[in-house]
Length: 162
Image (cartoon, rainbow, N blue to C red; front, top):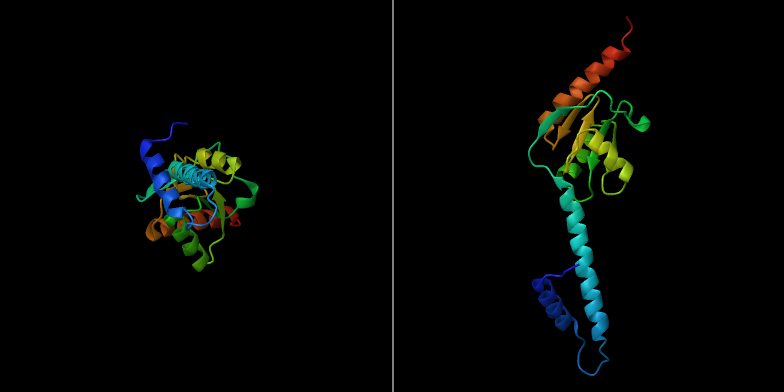
């Protein structure tokens, strides 16, 4: 992996700032190694979160007919998210405050959840909410309420006695 020159200069500055006071033993190699490992770790974390960025614009979709719904999600909204997404946290908080049954799937934590996310039409942005046969990319209370009402209405029709 090629490290950009600017990153190396930042590492040197960080190392100099971390140098202990005179009179103490200096492990310059350890300081440089720790700073480098921290920089690489932060960059890797940023790359993963950029892959599943927060969506600020809301859009709708339909679930493909052949998409299999996970057993633990029956009758619940599914929230595909990542740990740092503000819109995801807002959606979860909104559902908690209204006692709406839902399950959360962190797309960064599980390959299975990433596969489900893609099967539901996810293309890199979170949150992705699944309401029965409809999806919502992004989050807005009004758009959520519309889809949730349709989901509960259609569930009531399915469970109605003829």
